[in-house]
Length: 271
Image (cartoon, rainbow, N blue to C red; front, top):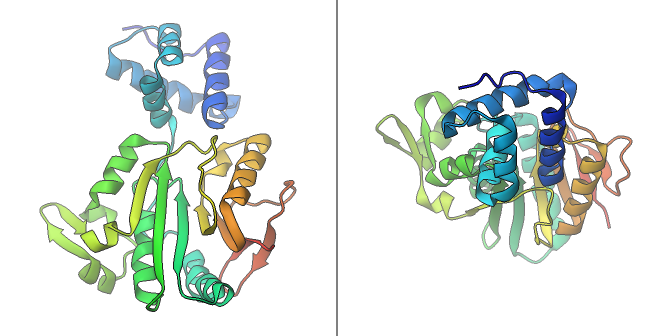
């Protein structure tokens, strides 16, 4: 098989333009080596040896294009990642939502870019503890990676993937099985896992809370602004947005209001 670790400029530009058009993810000369590595692995898996031939294939095969986009995404996550944001969610956002809504109902949350499910499961466990009856909650969890969504839907995590879960949550919401732990079906039932490309409208409306953490760092300014506009359209009045603690909407043309709490910063649709 030919060595595809070296991606010439012409093919690099073809691939990065296609990736940007289909996902909003930006590859620059700085992170070119990541694309080269993922592409080399993809061609090895498919038994192919032509960079340009594979490009032609994904241009004409929607399923293969989804698989390719899956292969180039980074899926680093863990349970209760950035505890300060979960503290703000528990002590500020949920009480505010219940106060604003007034009448008990269903709190609707979107975990966008949910990876292998640790974030939505963390949210579901916490909500199960703090949301009083007759309030209810439901979580939509989406990702561009079908492989990650399969892991998330299964709800099984090996012993080395349990970092961040409080001991009492592990005992209450998981069953010990061979090689790891399986989350309880009643928590899984609170979450709908679905494929979604953030470049497209989710068709969701009237969401109370959106989590999209450590995702927009892979987008350029125009793609970030477009994603934030789609989030705005999907959210209810007086709703809340969490992005990664190292991410910011500063300087972006957006209507979101910056909120600083005792625990962490976040954003609000304040109309």
